[in-house]
Image (cartoon, rainbow, N blue to C red; front, side, top):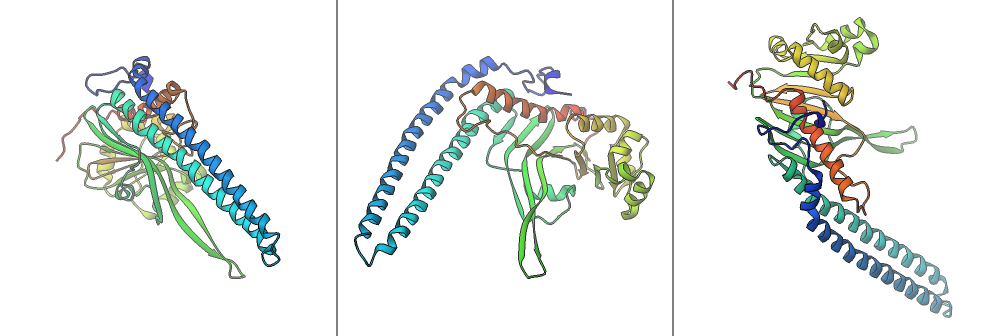
Length: 339
């Protein structure tokens, strides 16, 4: 189910069908302020290029002067080389810093205001991410973690359901040594994508994991036997769900209580709408959702964008598609109370 198919509701307070002309008009002063900032940056960029050129000319003149000194002739080449390298480093640092500053401003001043308009019950923190403790608690990606980072953190409510999510980039470092003793270090992806945590409004006694089923899809009944080696495998009646997911739990009864036929259908629909690597975990009173993706979310198409309407629509569409997961899983229907 896409966000465009959901009617706006007073209950969840989300503008599922945003009024983009009104948003554009409301943000016009911000667009103008950003354009003024960009103009000032362009002036600073030209000044940077001019200063770099002056420095290069000075370095060349010094090197030329050294040519007339027998003791310094051999130094001239290194003077030019060092000067050139220094200027390149200066330019890269200066110009890349401007691009990063523009992205930061755009997210802080424009995207944050878009969130306030279309999802006023959500708060957007561009520089933050989901805490590592949540990621580890889910146990959906069991691995050593050596580098944990992320951005574009959202927290708030959709209807009655509290949730938080962000982009994450989680890696581990692997070091190998060849026969000659040469060491090689590489970073291995543990998880890259959107990680979401929802309040399920029920306290669970055990932990239930719904993970991508690789073994049964590839090896059939033999794969099912392999899956059960570690114990805790939960077998359900829906053949499509069994083929798509491997379910393990520390509480078999509770797992079946959670994974009703309707819930299984909804999870399969989410898998079809997103990708086959989506995974779920139920623990304490929380539902964890892992959405691996290779694309970057909530980013500008270009660092010098002037098509604000396209950027806002793209950002809003991504945000609403994630918020709509609450509706896809029917999380605002309270079948029980926390105990």
